[in-house]
Image (cartoon, rainbow, N blue to C red; front, side):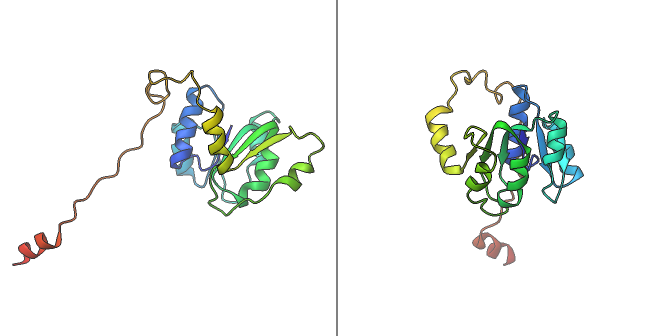
Length: 174
């Protein structure tokens, strides 16, 4: 599985969860520090790239197969590499568009051949529909979920800073 922005909020969650389920996780990050963070959270093979070049490394790590599923929060800039990194009959889930809308993929998908089952491309709207319709796995219960077993760790909470009200500031200054 390939996770973009593997050191971001969604990326860390996906890496931890997938690793807890036994998946081999490849992730893209933009720096060595982020690669260390992603690796510490379940990303077995972090790829440091700012140029969106990750397909070749993804294929190497997967023994030439490609990623069975790609979780893409990047969008347009990663689209061509996503297609190149995708395994036959793989799934490409687009849940964000940080670099712009990726646009329709039909011409590229048709160029792969006559088989419509080469891969699937899921946009945020169909992801929501699919999630509501089919992605409520009965095997994940409150006691066996990756979060309850400790496989998924919450990021540290930000420190809250109390900002004094104006009247409190006025009282201090007089």
